[in-house]
Image (tube, rainbow, N blue to C red; front, side, top):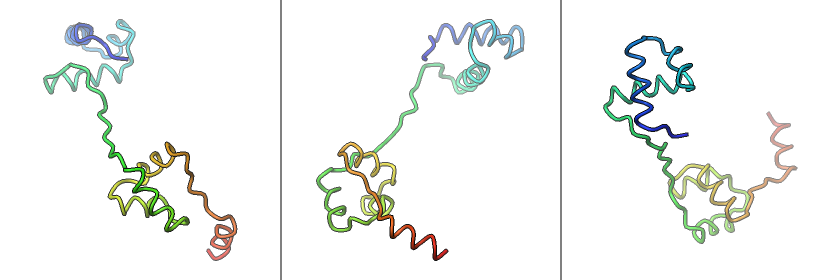
Length: 115
């Protein structure tokens, strides 16, 4: 939930007066960690809301199909190395395409027995 800058400023002013984060959190109905975050933002000089800014790279779906067809047993991290991205990005792109990379159970069992 995004709080208004005015509310943040009022809470921080109240914190300056009383000196207790717990008291401010109770008075404004906000979690203590939120007040602490506002204090840090105030020290940096910007109380405005900022999203987490998740960055992701869009993987070309046609190019993604090629390594899967060539090596159907490839792991997502191996495919990710080819594209220079994370395995999570590959997983999410494949999920959007309704493709899952499932491994052969026999292969998994033989690996378990060897270790």
